[in-house]
Length: 430
Image (cartoon, rainbow, N blue to C red; front, side, top):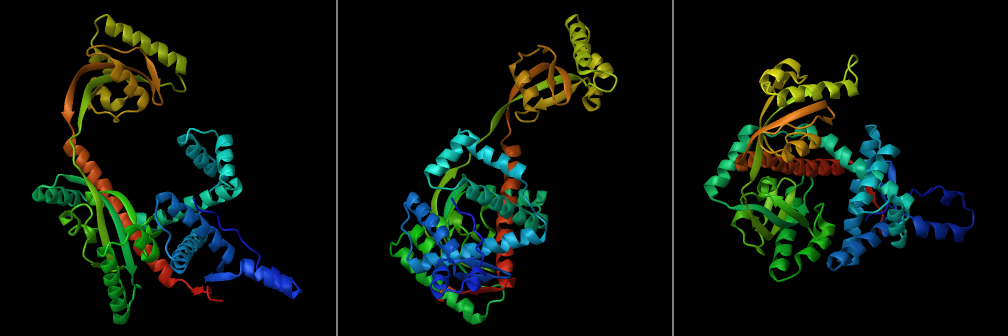
């Protein structure tokens, strides 16, 4: 868990007349980096390094040498500072109400009340106020990245077709890969000398890995990737989520294998295939249903809508045709023209309240009136079938995966551009 950035009033140094007091304050909160018109101080860096060391211990990864860890952590702080500055420049804010809801969600996922969640944080020596502000920053970071890159990313039907066709040609049954990654970055307008230096460094790192050194430890020490302090772990990635530059190299690897050095505009990459798992088919139970909807309005109260629908249901039970009553009385104008027919409905196609009633009905049965956010319904189940939705699910997932891959690449490019355009002065040696 990352700590927030406490803002230190550095001008206090100038206001303190006694030399010993000045030296003490400078030692505690000396500036370690200037980032545009802001600063990072030593106390921020040391606090974040304590958190990172704890994370590495928890994951079983040996901490890299102190100098390497300091460089890694400081670079993360610089990138975060730049992103928060961009958020401020563009007017992005996270209001207290939104922040409270986000924290409540975290507590609920851990099956805790807010009071219990605070108690857990306090037992771990985490100040709740600081935790709130760090959460606010995390939301801001996510939002500013989305705003910066979302509009640049789209996925066409042709891209989905090409991806699925490629997988079919390859005969691949692998659906997901677990990857670890090391990036040796080069600047956006790197000189030939900078590129050669980075390539040589990547070759030396690959030799260390081939010699048996821990990938996670080496990544934490040397990688410029965003997951460096997680040992380079990219987690499970769908095939289409693989960065484009990895797409050719990964399918030829076996679990445990290292890729050759891969060149991209952002630098040199080394990838380890940790594991992979197979594709599967998706068979769902579909329901062919029809319904009648009555909405409350300025002329019809909610109670009157329910009574009206109950009378319609009784008429169906007495033998009148459901489809004719739907055409005459349903407020769902789209389905009403089809006699209330909704066609074949898959799980998740309707709102939960509607689906619960529909799924519980036997074939041929008509429900009691029930309420959803759209109004009052009666629904009739006509028939059910098992449907192989594999192709539809694959296309939906392929779209999501291609989009995620593109977003990841755009975020990396945006962060590099943000860093290259910023004024950053390192003062670690002072």
